[in-house]
Length: 178
Length: 178
Image (cartoon, each protein chain N blue to C red):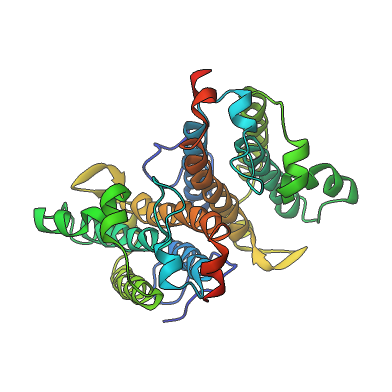
């Protein structure tokens, strides 16, 4: 599967035209997230800037579960099950539970999870067409699939902006351990 | 000109199909920026969270000049002139000059500027077609026009993520003045 040049949005071989353009956006957004966290240690991924901050690690976990949630919503056309809701609650909602539970994981763990989730997205999008992309998401009739997948990139970029801000303010001690 | 339902990405009357989908993304991103700053006072817009932070006001000024810069790059197919570079430098680069120069402006001033810039974007995009959108930007041959305009939304969302973070941490005294 040919991936796009990162600075062009255009149809991509293996996808219908509008899906290819969307894949270009998702791929670009993901590449900037990976660049923003490159080389971070566990201590840096877990660092809390203040009492109400999310750690960078928790934001990476959030990005992965948001994508999984939209896979379920748009590919499986259903809401999350109670079990999935419970399992992913800390990463979806962040805040106090995220600060307590999403810790102690090395960067590679977060990146592997993001890569595995994205693989499912790309493989499934390759089986759909532009008509599907425009269709209303049946368990969430206020949105269509194209908005849902735009939103996956958009929410990731929102948190990437926060990750860049937080990374620039990591304690010097922790920076020296990288 | 009919604007999209904010939670659907689809062709929009008055634009070619891929441009309409892009306009839906730009419009959604902008609506979330406006929501993120609603009701802020001048003191809140100027507040600096720490010595290296950008104020929320400076980030709004940045969002507007980024859009203007990409208008010049893609609609006029040229780089910024030395005069434009100088005029917009503080808002493009942010940092120390932004902290010093981008202050004292009420919210309405920022929003009016954003709205005026966006109006030019929408009016011009309505005169272009999907072939134009896919074309390489001649003064920046590494990008095409579609990436350029995706990036305008993407950079805005990056800073909106920071604005939300900063707003949640505004000093209580300043919050009480709203």
